[in-house]
Image (cartoon, rainbow, N blue to C red; front, side, top):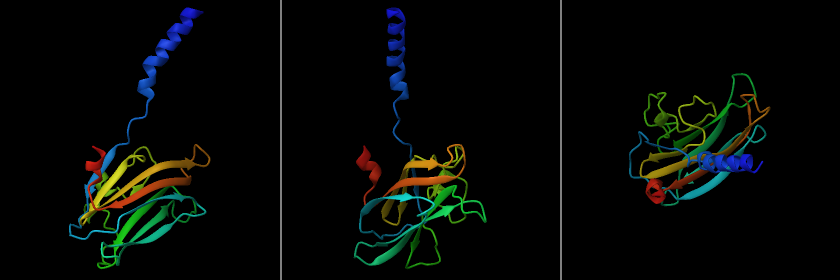
Length: 178
């Protein structure tokens, strides 16, 4: 009995480091917008759900003037109220022709760098759902990370909640992590 217990304990000690959580993958991209605008730094967490599926906030530039509109919108099957993912956009109030400056290429591609704004929990999504997403826009950075999400029922493709951290900063967050 002690031998079985000893072998089990040894196996657990070997396996434990393998099960430890790896730090989230970081996906970095630069927006097609490359200017000198900086913003008023801020960070917040938002919890999204079918009852509260959207979020909208104006962001100020470094002089305190409204400059961007940050929006989170649900995505789902057309004509249905179910949510399968959320999409984030950052619109520049000075250049309304661009509805979302959180893309690297105006044409859009399936590459991860062009999909940082899409919180898609599908295992084949261009960006892993828990990846830390860093997008440089003009002379500031948008950092986004899904902290938690839940399906109802568990085996369905429909989300009933998602918690996301957002940070807007003027210095490269990758250098702070080193």
